[in-house]
Amino acid sequence: MSKAVFYHAGCPICVDAEQVVLRYLDESKLNTEIVHLGTARNRIEEAESAGVQSVPALVIDGNVYHINYGASLEDVKKG
Amino acid sequence: MSKAVFYHAGCPICVDAEQVVLRYLDESKLNTEIVHLGTARNRIEEAESAGVQSVPALVIDGNVYHINYGASLEDVKKG
Image (cartoon, rainbow over all chains, first blue to last red):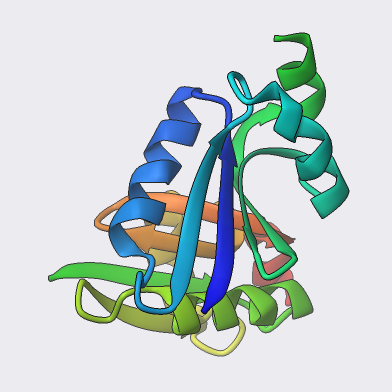
């Protein structure tokens, strides 16, 4: 099964995108993890290494999909 | 069932995002249509009305999710 990680920071755009990820991604094909970078700050480096530049972002098998635009990772770091 | 429309213009970023849409969206919950605005130019106005500003973009039940960034609709119009 493929692995998906949804990175967000709790912003309204993030929460909206999270609903789509949780509702419509096929659970039989994807093992999805939700990571709130505002609270799990020790995962910020991992997100950066994966190529995440802003949140919300969905990483599937190493490919990064930025969805709309909530906040840059630089802003999340300041947060 | 919810309705999803994936708008793209054939660019590499669009094609990549299309694979995710086709592979991982849950077909039991979403009726997904793929629209290539480069060829179906009569759908550009519809996309704009839905709030699409760039492609690739996924519209689910009226909510627009821009995925990464391939091309602006203005560029698609020139295309």
